[in-house]
Image (cartoon, rainbow over the protein chains, first blue to last red):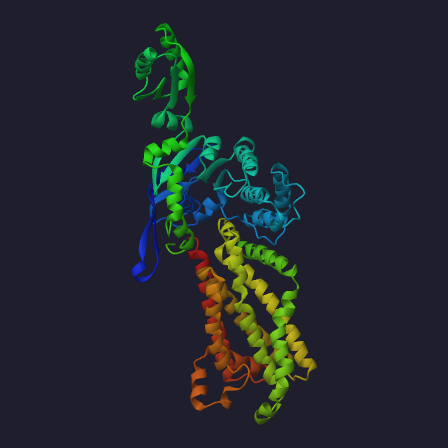
Length: 341
Length: 250
């Protein structure tokens, strides 16, 4: 559904002596198969939104090529637009218009008849728990309702591929989890391929079949969440033994399946790839050697551990650093979006 | 129906619906020229007496052009609001023609201007204006084209600046010389020679002269200049507006 090679986006920000080049995206390669839900994860300013804007034809790439739904984004932009749904992070409806009117007008811009747009719109309102809000203005809706309305806008013409740009940013935890269910239903019930950007680790973990991590305009990893965690960090196994003598035995046994083992008092810790498979054997070994365990704990690594291993900093630190910068790349994209086109 | 016409009609309908929810727009837009007509028109009597002819036949065309320029130039402010809420981006990700997104908004601005122009001309006729029907039609058409040019330029400016704080002073800077050098309020021939020569370089002055000539039924050389400038301004502004809508999104 998506194939990108060497996508580059460079902006010019500032004026006069302050003028500088911002390399928002530096050669991104992407492949997304039909039916996949791909999470595009990275801190603010990493280049997520800029990449997404290039894939949705909203921004012309400075260099590189991309095809979306089989059409080239540069030369077949109208065909790309017909094939995709897009939910921007700022919304898509006017606060003073009726929600139903907005969805129907949007569908008609895709060539749908008014009758078909009304029917599809009402079906989507029903599915997205927006029933009863057809004649309500977005300014009188909750944050969660507005985001679901944005998703209805993106789905009105039944696209095979949906781009969601930070769909749950700004929502409270309950509204986020509710929206996750609706996003999961996009594939399950609508059969859509979903490409979503997020800087929330739990969101990528919960929704995506595959996670593509971008940092400073470059893809640093692409795999399933489980594989990323296993390959990059592994699960943390924490053994608590009962006597001092058992510490050395436990360290040796754990050392046979872990590259690095730490000891702290009666605790012996090490990272183990796919601990679910390795730990039963470890327990049998320990029991056979007469080691009694006070406790055992297996901690799954988080995507933040993966990000830390890949980039040398945690996602949260990267986020804070990006927010502190005067002109982060995504922000530059938003303010100078027209310039390169 | 032609795809462009269908798409621009959808955008027009959407815009019109939003405007009709706030019907005060016609009244607020009309207020300034009507006040000029009621409170400034009578002051013109001795001045227009020197030129000869009906003072309202002379003054209403100027008010029409003022309505066309000032009303339409503020059209871009609502576009900034739509851009901020993501509406423009949502429209741009559809396969609709970029020019249809602009023209749909222009139809709304032109309809609004047409309604205001009819009210203004009607009021002028009630107050004693003496103009031919054909002259009024030509004058209103020129006003609509000029208004369309200003609305297109305003939309282009709005998407370029994306800030009401920047756009407001820019409009003021453009409008002030237009108001002073186009002879909307008083004939430029009343001023010093150098001022009149300077106003020759102001395209709007020729449009004002043409609308005025149409109302007086004088379809002479000034009409040709006015029509020429109106067409040029309309063409340039629509080209600018369309290219900004396209450029914005590739």
